[in-house]
Length: 462
Image (cartoon, rainbow, N blue to C red):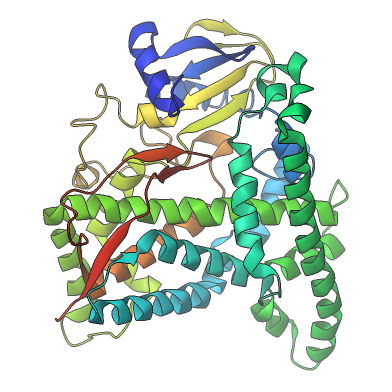
């Protein structure tokens, strides 16, 4: 198996078919590599059975015993946790509530790029975008900056990278003791302790702030509290007021926050990196996207000094560019499941407790269902406007079925807003001496560029 296993598995599937059994370590996995199979395993008769999750040593340690949404097993607990997230944290209302944060941070990014354009110097766009996504989620989650918060983001990156590292217990359970010898166990414990210490500080501070906010708000009405509340405030209110069938503890709050950072930083940042990478490699497509964005924002009697999220709904071609980027560069190339009972899939018997790996990357490059599958062609989504719900099993960048990514709406809003601003206010050039952009990738929990994206911003003179 190569360092990019989703590519190796696609090669194997060409020989052995879209459903195959492969041993990864000593653990047998069913590998799914077809849209038809995805449709079948997410239909009403199979979706629940295939909604389990494998349990990993690292996720158990980092996510409070896998008590979050991403890694917890399917069941009543998972359903209630997902409901909390969808109603209280990731609803359209909540996404709109934090719009001002996104717009402020994008304005800051544009200002930094304008300064760089004066000197015609190359910018590490990967770093700039990563800073933006981390700041947006930090402000939405915590409401303010903490003294050691600058250390939390690299700490979180270490935690996410650990999830992708080889662990003997997960692949060879009988050899789990070797993880102590390799240093894996001590590394996981150290990162987990540091993450928990920081989040404990944040939660304790918010518990004190809740009392003060409530007192200050006593003459203004509850709506004032809601407007000022950050995500930690919201989760603490759920802990205090909501009647649940389980005890919603601080550990659950920390696991939920980690999900938000894991899904709301690297996923968004890497998608934006790939959007800009593909556009720089395809200048005709970039020009077409720029013309659309600039026509909406800069032309006519309503010329604007900034882009708000209401403008994005009119940018049809930009949305196609984002979709095509996600088809070729889905942040998570595979989706891992575990069967909860004996089941048939594609005519094959699959026992209870079987690990299932859905190769989303392979399906979205399948020549049987996509024309020019390896080419960047946003127009394909004008002809066939597929949505992100994965119901056809064909376009599945956020997964499908019950395990569809709950943060999808938030991710798309931010990606489209940032991309629109980068295209509206700037033209983009490769640094001096660079003839062709290196598109090599590296596999962690998300597929990242192997080298940072360095580009020269040229201020739009229109």
